[in-house]
Length: 118
Image (cartoon, rainbow, N blue to C red; front, side, top):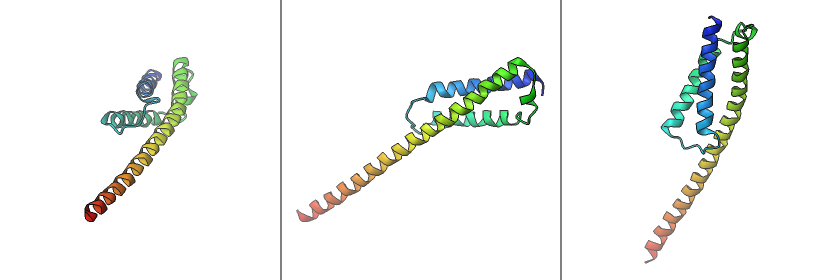
């Protein structure tokens, strides 16, 4: 693959990361279709760039490719942090929902007992 094609692939990947970070940084996880679609796009980007990372790309002398590759590396590190934050948000939501479920079950039981005593 030529340096121009590699550069374009890396630019598309970095643009995808930028959109993802812009939309989801510091946002609570909602499990929306938009989140699923964006994560699918990130996965596709990781796959497309992964095919380029066979050692030759990292040895390129093209300054633009090297800069874009450095940005990609920083984006991967940021993505790792972002995904960890999203996981923590998801776990917090799950704990909250579990607590609500227990509360609802207790209320249901209380209502059944109250109805039986009347």
